[in-house]
Every structure is written in C-alpha cells, then in structure tokens.
Length: 114
Length: 147
Image (cartoon, rainbow over all chains, first blue to last red; front, side):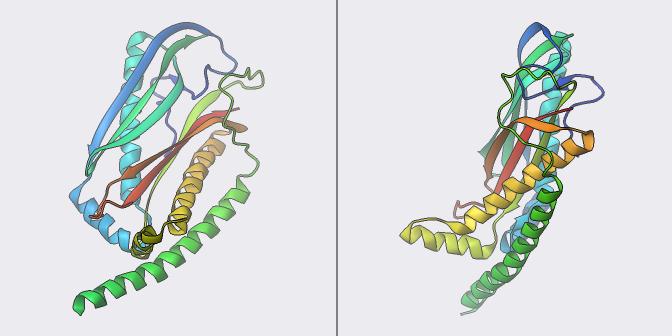
C-alpha cells in the first residue's frame, strides 16, 4: 500500500544522499513529477459528514496516495529517460492550489550507481 | 429554535462520538507503537556512510484526518481568548503518529532494520469548512528504510 518504489522500473528511491553500499558513478541532475487532483463530489459530501464526528478520511487518504504514486511515477519516467538507476534525496511537497484541488510534487536527483 | 437544536445535536454528536473514536484511535496507536519499537527512526542519515547497509528503499506513510464538529466550535471559541488549542493538538498528534506507523509498518514488512532521514510534510486540505478553519489535514511521513 505504502511502498513507493516502482518495482517494474527497477529504479531505487531513497531520501539519503546516495544509495547505501553503492557508489554513485554519474549524476543526471534534478528530476521531478507533479500532479494536481480534484476531489470527487460524492467523496466531498461524505467528508462533510465526517467533519461532524472527526477521524480519518479514508477516501482522501486513498486519493492522496494515488496522486503521490502518479507524481512519483512521472519523476521515475524522467529518470528512466535519462538512463538513471536510482533517484536520491527525494522530497515531497504539497499545496492546495484551489479549494477542492491539491497538488503533490515529488523531486529528487537522478543518479547512476554501480 | 430548530437551528439551535440542530447545532446542539451536532456538537453533542461530535463530542461523544468524536471523543470515543479518538480514544480508540489512541489505544490502537499505542498498541502498534509498542509492536514496532524495535525499528529506530532517525531524522539524520543523509550525509553519513552506512557501511552496514546493503539495500535501501523509500517508504511513505500518509493519512488525512478531519476534526469533528465539537472541535471546530471549541477551537473557534478558543480563538476569542487565544492560547493553546488542545483539541487541534491531539488531532495533529494522532495524524502524525498514524502516518509514522504506516511508514514503519511497510518498512518492517520489507525487512528494514532502521528508517533514516525521515521527513514530515503537512498540508491543510481546505475541505468542507466554510469558515476557512481546518477542515482536514494531510500528513505525510517519508524516509529510507535500510537492511
């Protein structure tokens, strides 16, 4: 559910400055991916009810997880095009651009490790 | 009159159900925190050599938590006099711990011995609330698991 590395591409993601146990042999620079998602009206109404009793909004959690995966996938696509096999120092940023829409932004440095 | 009654019902429902859910959630969090205590979480690790690590992978845990009606009202009353808004403190605390646990649990599943360079990200999701207050908060925790 929360595993973020896309296994299919074989690209390692880390928040560290390198990949432990491996040496960086080439830098390709910054790669990024972002996505903006709007909420489903039905989900928003349900969330309104949830605001009475509080607690986790599962529908939103799922929505944000999907958009996070989308953003990471876009970043990985860029890295793949460059020929990288790892993305290091990955960071996330979120912002709400408009009421009902949230942006998720992922960025990192594409590198080639041994 | 009817408006006042609905208002009181909403506050009551928010207070009783919201409180119960919060207590249950805290019990759940404490239980899971005890289970996952053996995995250290660090906010450093980026610049160190990690000779003992062979593999690394990023793990993310995220959660969206909403406040209940009672909390919204009590926080807006608190706004009049200022000071600590404890009702929101517990909300955010719950969210952070839950997100952290989700990250930890997925790292444990993978077989991590520790999680390094953990970062927190919090975003306010302007949800249903008309008054512009905290409708819901998204909390994201991410870090690198090593093994």
